[in-house]
Length: 137
Length: 140
Image 1 (cartoon, each protein chain N blue to C red):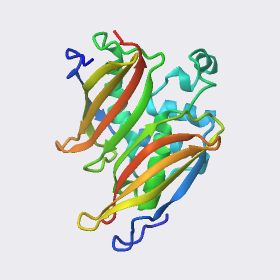
Image 2 (image 1 turned 45 degrees about the horizontal axis):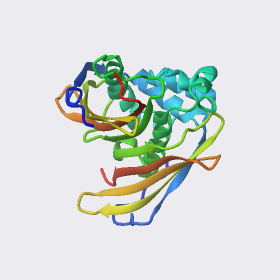
Image 3 (image 1 turned 180 degrees about the vertical axis):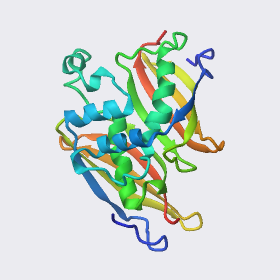
């Protein structure tokens, strides 16, 4: 059943600095023993750092939304990068609850993500699907 | 770095060079540190077992980052990766090797883009990432 009051809730994380050092640590973690691919670039899924983490932290902390971390599953993720992200960019990130519904004892939460750079350009759009047991709250 | 052929030569059915990577617990810990995702299911064996997992599991976003690298290598540059998405279908456990594969399913000559279908399989034979899709810029 759709839950109107929770749909449309929006979480903003302004001023996320795309730090070169952090991006290179991220790329090194992804490469592991194989080493870093394209060390000068910001890896595409560094969006996890400048967009996903700072907004999800607020999503998880919102008692009105009622997401429980225990048993929460990140089920799907997609991103689009209309303009490349560069080290030194400062982006404003946001996440909005596009839908939250419970079916057969599972709650499906769809978030729409967006990040805009210092020039006002949209550098990233995304969609996350989270799954949790029960109805939340 | 393996460059992709010019747009006129990329064809539907082309296979992306597979990328295999063995993901260790140390790498998962490094990714947790680098990404800020310290969920204990990735880091704490006892916690992971308590919530019904066989052990700690890799972050889905770490697997997706490896998938992005596979696409970036095929495209010749990370900046050519315009879209990427996937479903996190099964967990990847530390010590397992993940292999990312992809195939070109559409080429838009006018826009200069190719669309790939992607997936990732673990060395245990589990399809860890499914419904993968990327759009890649072929020039510029």
